[in-house]
Length: 203
Image (cartoon, rainbow, N blue to C red; front, top):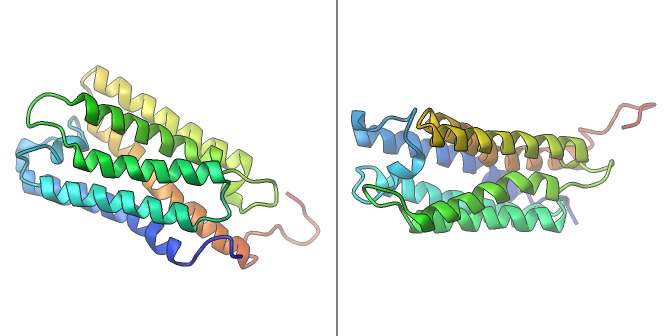
């Protein structure tokens, strides 16, 4: 059985493209009233926003991509695949529970927080042994999770101080949407013998 299905390369590669393309297009439709530095992605999908339909479609597509990638990523540990799929479900629910045009939404915020946590933890939960593809090895997986958790803390701090929350959120979500593609690529290279250590070396 292959480490990963070939179509998982497409689903994982489309995830960051759809997310970034979605918020870029939605922000352009919103115009100068939207500040991407201080305002979050959720504002773009809020009721009444000019680009809400674009951002909603992008989030739905992102969730579907994560679900498909989790299904095809056989090299990852089951716990990691479940966490990645859970992050995909969270993206779908977030899209279906947009924030109101003014104020916040406890349901939206709670689901988004769960999604952030699952997508930050899945690299560590998906880890394999020393012979695993490099992106699934313990040290690399732990570093990816740590980086995403630090980014999430940065986002919370910026939100609390009403600072650059939009920038922080975009950095974290970009990392989280891109990492499945890195893992899938690593698995494909491993299967082809492209990330094996040179002869005479180990580790």
